[in-house]
Amino acid sequence: MKRDNLQLYFIMGTSNVLIQKPLNVLEKALQSGITMFQFREKGPNTLTGQAYENFAQECQKLCQQYNVPFIVNDDVELAVKLGADGVHIGQEDLPVSMVREKIGSMILGVSVHSQAELQTALQYGADYVGIGPIFATSSKKDAKPPSGTKFLQQVRIQYPELPIVAIGGLNCSNAHTVFKAGADGIAVISAICESEDISNTISTLKSFSILDKKIK
Ligand code: TZP
Ligand code: MG
Image (cartoon, rainbow, N blue to C red; front, side):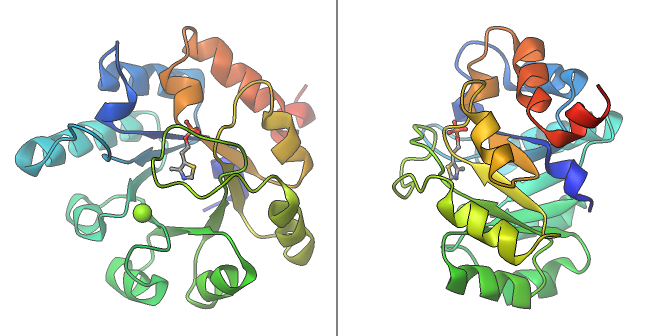
């Protein structure tokens, strides 16, 4: 994967979308220029069984149409079964080494909150790391307290080339702070799922990235 893929990383499951249809939100986000997608079916009233798998497959199909990597949160078996582009795991999931063994050369993203977690992720071949929650979030019930940008800044200085995505409470008003701190991109749920104008939200969020500044 390229660092550029992380520029605007959209994460969604059915529980994140209240008014519209989740697949419509995903399609609009793809049309508007998200650069990576994570299927994260968690929280209240989530799909299970065949409905869960079908929904994942529909999301994957849409991502393929727009040539955007389709990443599965936590569920390594599903990722392998569907032939996803990658998997994203947190610290409560299977160990990084074991996931790498199961997924071969697929993209592997790992959420890290400390040097120790970062070192383990890198040792076992994480392709990118997620750092956060930077700000308070209401999209993850068991989220750690907001960390601010300090750890992110440290990791960027330590590893100038490491693909890093920032997550947690990011929106059009604060996304500039994490790009400034060295993130390659931002991962968002509510900023897109709750937007009344997805296309405008996405172009604003992307405008803070150096990638968009270069072509302006
Ligand atoms: N991991 C850390 S914060 C978070 C996840 C999955 C939720 C991000 O959602 P939002 O709505 O962009 O704050
Ligand atoms: Mg997880």
